[in-house]
Image (tube, helix red, strand yellow):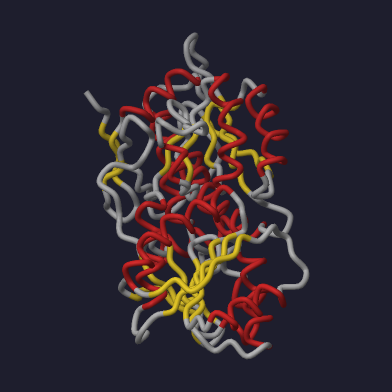
Length: 380
């Protein structure tokens, strides 16, 4: 039987000193959760946007003076698989860590999973969307430790293609990917859908980081494309887009959630105007009360929650619900995560199938940059 729990925490924090709790023989007084994602480097903003969701959830939990307190630590793997391969063994070796909120990026997940499998350490990712992470026929299959609260790129890829060509007569589509686990994966799923929506006039796989995008832009212009689907992350997308606009490309630019970070409009400057982006996430400030948002800002010092605060908050609260229920060992928490059913902050039901995907799926939303701000709510 599945455990049924509620993730939505109290709207305001409880003030005052912690109440002393007598230790028991079977329960730890403090356990640790790790947030793993990019916190420095070229793609840091994705993790920087997400981390406050975990920070706030744990602050709310600890403010209620639970029997078991929770400590949150950061594991900065820079959205880089090579870095993750060095970071994950250290997290796995830290016996205090009972769960990983993450990873943020699919390449990080790919190279972290072996360490976490060996340690029996549960992962709940807010944003790693590569299809193969939950594909039992894949070499990077993450079961039984990997889970994600967002839909995978079998849904986001087609949504990106559909959103990219929306309103475009006779779409001529150029697809770019950054050769990463994430970028190449979503490009593959977007391509299948794009072929049915218009003509694919060109493709390019680019090893990043790349300082000069002129040659890629030249290929785009020579192809006659009026839609570019850029499958990668924000920093590279911004460089490409600025170069494209500077060299006369006037067509649509569309990118997936890896592009959709709070800093993207700043990185791309005026070139960002009109950029289209997707994400299987709803902004946190649209889901919570003004009082809760005020407390969020008080705790995190973040006034406007970035993308994936919602899913990171939900991921953290899955672990916190298990801990509150008395599960404080890695094995107990892994079992709880695998079999539980929760209610997310949006009121949605969250549970995982055998492979770690969220059951029931979720809609992928469209976002647009307008007047230097990312606007949510475009229908795909």
